Image 1 (cartoon, helix red, strand yellow):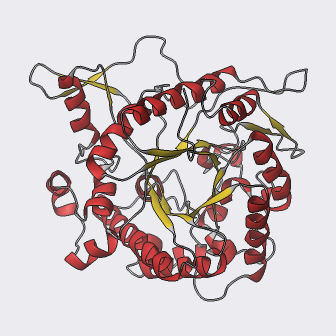
Image 2 (image 1 turned 90 degrees about the vertical axis):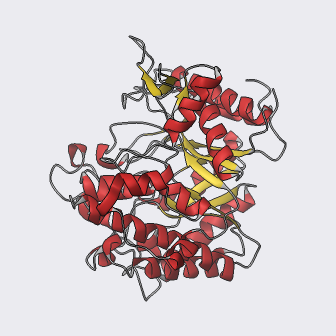
Image 3 (image 1 turned 135 degrees about the horizontal axis):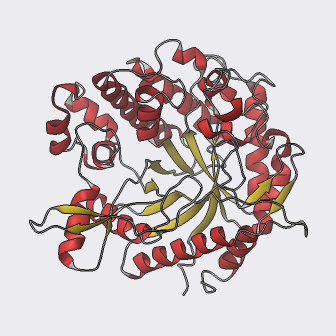
Length: 450
């Protein structure tokens, strides 16, 4: 089993989750810096103040990436570190940090894939309404222009927004993420429209300002369903269910991907959301649907679907004792086959798995190693599903395991460990887990050892 020679073998992180130095060297406060100070907002009142201290240990971490064998690293450039007030003045020390990090990556032969927004909005902009403010697309476009001007001599691969579904649903509807609001459904959908416009403004800024021909994508949650079998009726049911929209939920793919890749909101979504749907113009849709080079998808798990007696999708319950991780997410490796198939059919863009990973209960053993066979098996099984898709002509271009390091897992603090590298959060010590060593073997064999 071998993958294409130019396949990207990567791992992913986000700035607030790993960098630390939350209030150092001119960085401004972000919404997560503020949210974490609210008692009870985060498990055990943890915060990303120090996190993995990647800000000071970046060279060590790049060395670990090189040791594993990564040829791609998905990372975020922190908006509040670059522009402490969100707009206006640029923080020279923030620029300097990423200058050093990019140079270190390239020296190690690792290609940076940069995410421009992974959830930590500058607090100064949140105080002006955040994504509910109709000026927010311009703010993000201006930030993008600064980053592209400073770094596009070394960065070619860009992603605009990470998981818009989570930004809006968790941050503004359920309130379990920063900024911790609970606004109306209609207000949330309008904020979501502003976020999609921000994506489009960002793409325009990259295209117009890049010093090297850019490769631009987007990293939504690849919310999907799996087919219960290869029976064409079940496959059709799963395909249909993957793009369905529940009128009571923002948790779907079509609403967040159709405007970007097809230039329109899905008719079923407009009907489902009715009067709550956002107001928009044809010009808005042109901005949102700027041409992209790849479709990034963050995929972790999915329910199986079969065709019911009437042909309609019918969820297939998980069997008793099914495999799950410590998030209680079912382990469903074939999701990367089915989701890849359905997203490529609909959007006709090369695919990149921008996140896929698992958290398990683990510890440092007496031999000084971290033995995590469940994660090793997870990586192997999911990559086998990717290869099945590639063999059927689905253009998967790369795989970024989430995450490189154990890190701050948002409202769960440091409770869950997703990393292929163990981090001792008291000492900062790093240990490459067995899964990281295995992933390195996969990379060196081009997938041949799977």
